[in-house]
View 1: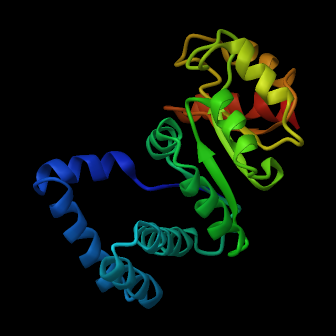
View 2: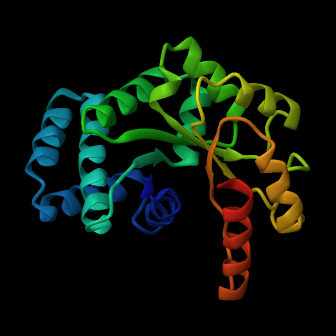
Length: 220
């Protein structure tokens, strides 16, 4: 199973409903306390007492990963990916410590760290500059025949993809928001190097069966 944290859009909505960041923080603290996750609570208290941002990030990760594991049940949790909003915000601000901390935190727990991004080429470049081993992570990013959402360009993203040491990319937006037919979309993905898997959205059972059948035939 591959999961994405945090549920960023819901937190943005709650921040507006609860009076901004202070209200959202209070809600999260209550959730963590009632969850009974004592490691997360201890880390959070330490972060508040020392005004330590890293400890506060660790608190959320301990809580978030534990929630995902509970939801996974008997399914194996292969990777936890950082949500695109957080990944790209930290990437734009050059917060290398967030990427290093997140990677080390999950690796120590036997989980492959992942990053969901809309800036694939830049992320690959920065992870290399920050000495984060690209063999240790998974990246989810847009890849499609027409270059939809491939920033800064289709060519730059393909170049960055080819530079990776192993297949560790989950291709998303492969249908370009419905612009491409499944056959041509999958043919393009099948010709790319270093693609570990794909994620597609479907609205009907019939479409799901057809799309998944095509993916199995072309990519497996």
